[in-house]
Image (cartoon, rainbow, N blue to C red; front, side, top):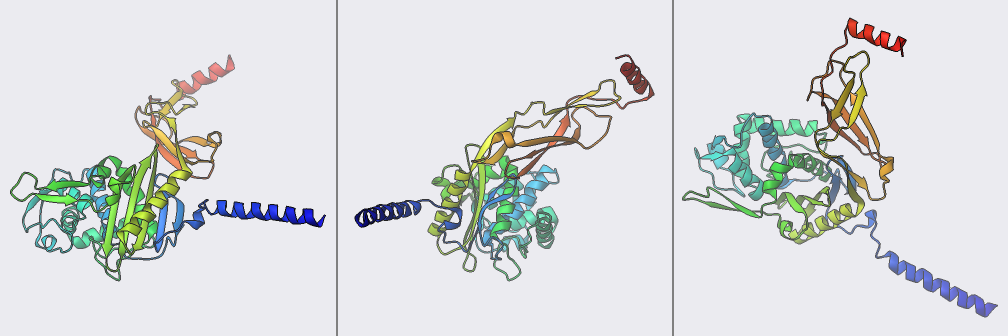
Length: 385
């Protein structure tokens, strides 16, 4: 019996040791081996955090700051306050910026689109200041706009003191806030990613002074699906990167901060994005022209309101989520009458993990406002049915 117990003990010990070695190969969220002081991994539609480490630690953002400037420019273009084709006259102040620049000269004229391109690809300090002055009339006003938008986005760890990202005790942010800002920025997907995905480009291309733009995000060449967003470096900030990539319909945004080398910055970003893609899946719920919901409108002759979101709706789920547990609710926010193509409410989609997605709901037909005759006809109809 003693001999058998010893054999059994040895077998059990071997199994435990073997399992222990196997477990070392399983990477859990809290075991990611990262160099960064602070990181945040986010799903940009729901703005839900997938993974984080010291996400609210206040650090210097360096040129990741410019993501806010780029957002404000794109917002102004979308709202038709400015155009990409507008010409900007460069001020003396804008031309005096040091650091990374395209060497703008005082009174030089350059289109908004080219200045935007120089910021998105090359992180040009003079270009972002010129854009800010054009949009807000002065650099100070532009920085105020940046801080106002940060408050609107609930970026509670952030305060901007300049548009460039130059180190300043009053200029700080966190990896959470930068991932959140990056998530809002990729909402302008067709515009921002067109430039942030470019490895190189030119401004003043057809002039005597062409300037070659080189993207500082070297992962664009090596990481599948990578198409942005913004690097940053100063001696105090270290190496920073807010990155985004898309695979199989899933987009992820990551921010890493305060790295000692570009190599470590890249390694941490790859680990985070790989982790994010291992956890998420995309499913398609509606095509662009699908009818989303039909409402019965009481006391109306044409009593059915047909609605659509007029866009393809894909949502992001955790890999383990059951699609049958998705909750969909269409909500009308106004009363009759309804006019064709009018915004009438919203579609709310709740995933099994609690993420909530909202989409505008539009009328596909018109429904008139009920009147006395309509009420009477409905009463008679119910009496004789």
